[in-house]
Image (cartoon, rainbow, N blue to C red; front, top):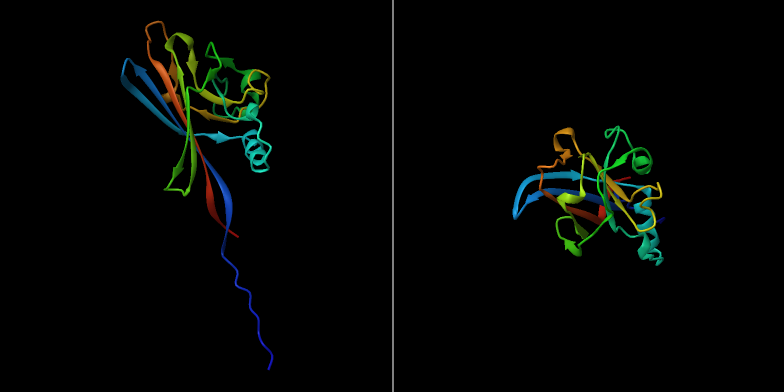
Length: 182
């Protein structure tokens, strides 16, 4: 009697997934008066950093470190790799993170890293419609940021001489095991 062998295949497979969420708060004193929430776009530079970390090639100069703000000429279409070269900076400094935390995210069964940045009102000018996250190597060299967000026109941050709002940015980057159809 011949024995039949069957293969059982799974209708899904696992994939490493990335989710980026950014919360921007405009704060006067201890009062938050505007909150902006966006999902960020991670770039190939971010994924190269993560792949190198998985391979054991951890170079801290490549990790997310600085936030910079821009007034993009075409915020709907400008891509991350040309932000620095063709757009106007709206911040006097490369804002380093003031806090970083890694924690388990039970809703996604993954881990999140949250970077917090604080931009004093005196260091921002004009209209900001793009925020970009850089490492120590890339910022200022017209190189692709690690991630960025484009603000909708009703979310643009407009600085003026009467504006005394500090900008607090919480950038959460989550990696988790996602199921994808084969």
